[in-house]
Length: 134
Image (cartoon, rainbow, N blue to C red; front, side, top):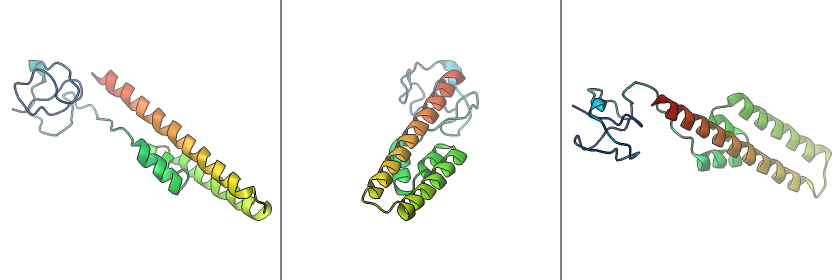
Protein backbone atom coordinates (compact mmCIF):
# COMPACT_ATOMS: atom_id res chain seq x y z
CA UNK A 1 0.00 0.00 0.00
CA UNK A 2 1.45 3.42 -0.99
CA UNK A 3 2.24 5.92 1.70
CA UNK A 4 2.03 9.70 1.27
CA UNK A 5 3.18 12.73 3.26
CA UNK A 6 0.23 14.35 5.02
CA UNK A 7 1.76 17.80 4.63
CA UNK A 8 3.01 18.04 1.03
CA UNK A 9 1.37 14.97 -0.55
CA UNK A 10 4.68 13.49 -1.69
CA UNK A 11 4.64 9.73 -2.36
CA UNK A 12 7.18 8.26 0.04
CA UNK A 13 9.90 6.04 -1.39
CA UNK A 14 10.27 4.07 1.83
CA UNK A 15 7.05 2.72 3.36
CA UNK A 16 8.66 2.75 6.83
CA UNK A 17 9.92 6.35 6.60
CA UNK A 18 9.53 8.44 9.74
CA UNK A 19 10.00 11.75 7.89
CA UNK A 20 9.08 12.96 4.41
CA UNK A 21 12.09 13.01 2.07
CA UNK A 22 10.68 16.10 0.30
CA UNK A 23 9.46 18.47 3.04
CA UNK A 24 10.92 16.82 6.17
CA UNK A 25 7.67 16.64 8.14
CA UNK A 26 7.00 13.73 10.49
CA UNK A 27 4.99 10.89 8.97
CA UNK A 28 2.13 9.35 10.93
CA UNK A 29 0.38 6.05 10.27
CA UNK A 30 -2.75 7.97 9.25
CA UNK A 31 -1.11 8.96 5.96
CA UNK A 32 -1.39 5.51 4.36
CA UNK A 33 -3.50 5.49 1.23
CA UNK A 34 -4.25 3.33 -1.77
CA UNK A 35 -4.17 6.45 -3.94
CA UNK A 36 -1.33 5.91 -6.42
CA UNK A 37 -1.44 9.33 -8.08
CA UNK A 38 1.94 10.94 -7.53
CA UNK A 39 1.93 14.30 -5.70
CA UNK A 40 -1.73 14.11 -4.70
CA UNK A 41 -2.33 14.84 -1.01
CA UNK A 42 -4.43 12.55 1.11
CA UNK A 43 -7.35 15.00 1.31
CA UNK A 44 -7.38 15.32 -2.53
CA UNK A 45 -6.66 19.05 -2.34
CA UNK A 46 -4.84 20.41 -5.39
CA UNK A 47 -1.08 20.77 -5.47
CA UNK A 48 0.01 24.26 -6.46
CA UNK A 49 3.17 24.27 -8.52
CA UNK A 50 5.33 27.35 -8.20
CA UNK A 51 5.76 29.45 -11.31
CA UNK A 52 9.35 29.65 -12.54
CA UNK A 53 10.71 33.16 -12.09
CA UNK A 54 13.52 32.74 -14.67
CA UNK A 55 11.09 31.40 -17.28
CA UNK A 56 8.63 34.23 -16.66
CA UNK A 57 11.37 36.86 -16.94
CA UNK A 58 12.77 35.34 -20.15
CA UNK A 59 9.28 35.27 -21.67
CA UNK A 60 8.70 38.90 -20.71
CA UNK A 61 12.08 39.92 -22.07
CA UNK A 62 11.34 38.27 -25.42
CA UNK A 63 7.70 39.39 -25.57
CA UNK A 64 6.80 41.96 -22.87
CA UNK A 65 3.76 40.95 -20.80
CA UNK A 66 3.77 37.26 -21.73
CA UNK A 67 5.52 36.38 -18.47
CA UNK A 68 2.50 37.82 -16.67
CA UNK A 69 0.22 35.63 -18.80
CA UNK A 70 2.39 32.64 -17.79
CA UNK A 71 1.92 33.63 -14.13
CA UNK A 72 -1.84 33.35 -14.61
CA UNK A 73 -3.15 36.90 -15.19
CA UNK A 74 -4.05 36.86 -18.87
CA UNK A 75 -5.88 40.21 -18.93
CA UNK A 76 -3.05 42.08 -17.20
CA UNK A 77 -0.40 40.41 -19.38
CA UNK A 78 -2.21 41.25 -22.60
CA UNK A 79 -2.80 44.82 -21.41
CA UNK A 80 0.93 45.22 -20.71
CA UNK A 81 1.80 43.71 -24.10
CA UNK A 82 -0.63 45.87 -26.06
CA UNK A 83 0.27 48.98 -24.06
CA UNK A 84 3.99 48.53 -24.65
CA UNK A 85 3.49 47.85 -28.36
CA UNK A 86 1.40 51.02 -28.73
CA UNK A 87 3.81 53.15 -26.68
CA UNK A 88 6.82 51.83 -28.61
CA UNK A 89 5.05 52.49 -31.90
CA UNK A 90 4.24 56.05 -30.86
CA UNK A 91 7.77 56.65 -29.59
CA UNK A 92 9.32 55.40 -32.81
CA UNK A 93 6.97 57.29 -35.15
CA UNK A 94 6.34 60.56 -33.31
CA UNK A 95 9.48 61.00 -31.26
CA UNK A 96 12.32 60.24 -33.64
CA UNK A 97 15.20 61.17 -31.38
CA UNK A 98 18.29 59.52 -29.90
CA UNK A 99 16.43 59.03 -26.62
CA UNK A 100 13.81 56.69 -28.15
CA UNK A 101 15.87 53.47 -27.73
CA UNK A 102 16.55 54.39 -24.10
CA UNK A 103 12.82 54.84 -23.48
CA UNK A 104 12.12 51.48 -25.17
CA UNK A 105 14.66 49.77 -22.89
CA UNK A 106 13.04 51.47 -19.88
CA UNK A 107 9.66 50.06 -20.93
CA UNK A 108 11.12 46.55 -21.20
CA UNK A 109 12.63 46.93 -17.71
CA UNK A 110 9.21 48.06 -16.46
CA UNK A 111 7.64 44.95 -18.02
CA UNK A 112 10.25 42.75 -16.32
CA UNK A 113 9.51 44.38 -12.96
CA UNK A 114 5.75 43.87 -13.38
CA UNK A 115 6.41 40.22 -14.26
CA UNK A 116 8.65 39.79 -11.21
CA UNK A 117 5.96 41.24 -8.92
CA UNK A 118 3.19 39.13 -10.46
CA UNK A 119 5.11 35.84 -10.20
CA UNK A 120 6.07 36.61 -6.59
CA UNK A 121 2.44 37.39 -5.73
CA UNK A 122 1.15 34.20 -7.38
CA UNK A 123 3.79 32.00 -5.74
CA UNK A 124 3.17 33.54 -2.31
CA UNK A 125 -0.59 33.06 -2.68
CA UNK A 126 -0.05 29.42 -3.66
CA UNK A 127 2.29 28.86 -0.68
CA UNK A 128 -0.39 30.23 1.68
CA UNK A 129 -3.02 27.98 0.09
CA UNK A 130 -0.74 24.95 0.53
CA UNK A 131 -0.09 25.82 4.18
CA UNK A 132 -3.81 26.18 4.86
CA UNK A 133 -4.68 22.81 3.30
CA UNK A 134 -2.96 20.79 5.97
